[in-house]
Length: 565
Image (cartoon, rainbow, N blue to C red; front, side, top):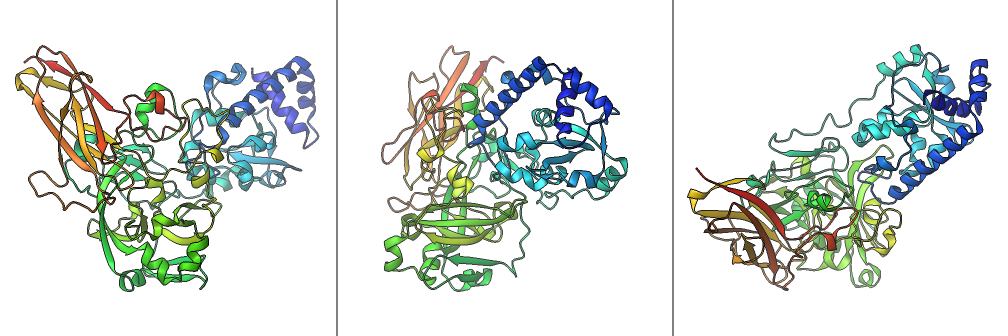
């Protein structure tokens, strides 16, 4: 296997320089059958990558939640890759590496002292030709931004393309010039959060504390970041509003606070991937392994988007052609591409839509992790459209062309896999379906039979401003059902006033205390919510399973043991 790998590396090397005599001899030892193996293996690598290229990007076009299926990979190179220096491979200077910065001259990169010719990989790179940003230089600064690359199978792929070593002198210089961690200025987070990824940071609170408060404290509100948290100076912050006949409108943070009335909306925000971990139990999906706590409820305050667009020149003439409002954040990748998305114009301009340019969360300045100084809050709509660190608004006749609008946050049939996914065929997720989950007791908990009763707690919510009107709970796997008590405030406190029809943006917390079923050793507890349009959660996951693990709103189930003293 070592010889096979050497043959491949040296064959690639010959394209760029006259091989040393030992290389020529080694290449001659590679038989035509070896070349057939090489071609077959490369074809398999290519096929595997192309199956997942289309839509698993979770950061930018250059970032992929690599879903390579190990069992489909040829085993010839199944051994772990190594970054140790090899005395049998050529040594290159940094100047030599920098000569290979294009497909014509070959695309070389360095990583931990190794030199890699990735020319053949460029056409199948999931991020397209953005890999060329690293051409002739080091991968480390780019991979530092996206920790998803730091995984065994990614290194396995890279190892296929090693052609030499970087000179010791240049390796030393490279180490001295190593890029700083782009996440080093991220804010501190509460240690109770359950982390799904550190860089970028994505985390959720434990379910048992999620519903202790009707208003979720910002430190416990789930964190969903696609890139490093930008550092924004509130004094110099400027929001650009574009696409309207009067030209661009530039607003400072002070402008937003003084020129427009302040509105407050209590609204629940949920990630499209909430409860993805349950879908993984049915069949593996691609994405962060969210539990049931990628959801939270907060009081958001700021200027109404409608007011700002009217001030910028939105009127009847614009309404004739405008169909979407784009949002771009100030969080950017190494290419300068910002996180972006869009919502329909009717949601943005509807007086009852309650879309805010929020600068406060729970009565305080919005924290950095949640979009300081300004984020969009789009009540009733998937969290992905609630753009943080808002920098630009564009009124447009077309939907946003950003990756996150066109290739992420879309639902697909259970029968669609990565070999036949067509993102253009599926609309971007906006309003979310009815949802509920059990936060207490935890799955696998033990209940003492002497307690005689069991208290079950959870949350329920529906998108689009639809109000949850009932939560049904079963303690026996769905054979019998009981109705839980709903509340719109903290326990023991008055509920918040009922919202107008179609503007029920906040969740309901629910609770049921019921006798333990007699003689039961194990309970399967189930909850399902019903909204005021009589939408109800589906009973199982398989009919709604999708390759990205989005929109999981099947009945939530937990199993608990009933034990004796």
